[in-house]
Image (tube, rainbow, N blue to C red; front, top):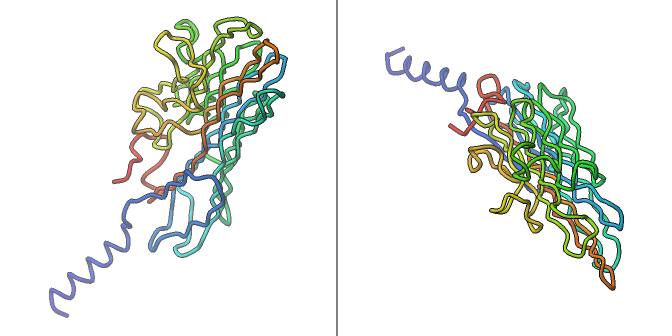
Length: 300
């Protein structure tokens, strides 16, 4: 065997042992089949559930609960096999302006192989947070209830839960959203500034989302959408920044929608809450090298 033939065989062996770093990103709601590329033996995966849209009635209403986040590293996979990916939808505003509005829970996001099932549940319309199971780490979504305010709950973080609605965003410098215990949990939405039942009600903001590219470099939770005055904007949609690197972290995932409110006029008007941020699943490989919650999981 000549030198050129030996060199080509060595090169082939090196390529076979070192598959190209890559990713598969799913953000459209629905159920999908993902086929493992050639030579890929391990993957790392993060799932984020959808945020909820709250119901609106004559009573005090919480914002929507935030979706959970779960990740797992070094998952064994088989080249050529297909696995199921589910993407949860963020809750939509529903109902009519002259009747109580029905909220919608956020959908779950999941990744399933023969041996592993990761589940990040969506938030609930009643303000309860989404929970997670099956992974190495993550956090449940942030909750929202009437005693805390009316902002949406933040999405779960990589190392803790999302911020609580009504205590996050820029509604109060003294009460920022939880940072997900040092992870990139979404901030809670800002609370109403005025009485819930007034003709000119205060404003609330939706919960912050969390990104799929690892926790932000400083571990700061995302903020609920806010106005320049520091109060939440009543028209803001679900999901805020995923941290200081908002663009990099894709921070639109999993934030709970802001609360709607009742306008006591004749006839009474029911103004819908904000839509919840949608879910997402990101698969990266090789999973024994590129691992969450590191920020260094970008495509390389």
